[in-house]
Length: 293
Image (cartoon, rainbow, N blue to C red):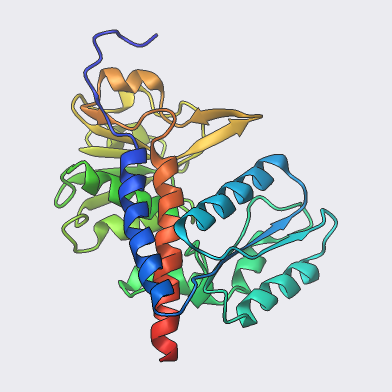
């Protein structure tokens, strides 16, 4: 049970996403006025209802923001070769400036191999190894959306990051590792002392207890508990797991009784992730147009 006297400041993601979306919409209008309709393409393999719902949401949001949103839906028994053909069609289409393959895919599809076949300059998720390498080197390129959204959320709420002790619980390639690279870079909204802990660190709680900012990025429900953070820390819940339609976050809700600021169980990092997808898309479209001039 949550303590009714909880004083933790909530850090909802929707205001952050709204601010990013307004910026993206302005840039889309400017690009269209100059004669280019930015295109964000999507590929869905199979009939997973949650994945189909995500694609519909992304297409609807793309339309609202002014993007063209071509889509390819492959059947559940599609092969890896079928997926590569679909990806290649979007790679070769000059009207497509950004694309994604919805995850998860059916078991016969190797998602990591599929990512390798996406043109890195159209990789809206920022997960192609070339783009992860660009991130590591501090070069221009699409940044994985959830890490970018977390940095934007911290900046929006003016949470000091530079010089602070940030501990990331989780080392996955979509969140923990790229987030560590991002927050350690020399920028006003980053420049932190970053520690990454994971299942191979038996005393990971000792690290999270000393952190100014703790970011849970594991996908293990309730793994981060009040005893794992110091009073007054900032807690960001980046990892979730779904059981059916029920969302189960990494952060135990009782952490709000100890933290100074915390993302809500629902509507925290999620909205910022989606917003950053479209920021990546307009970035890629603008670069493609600039490169063709």
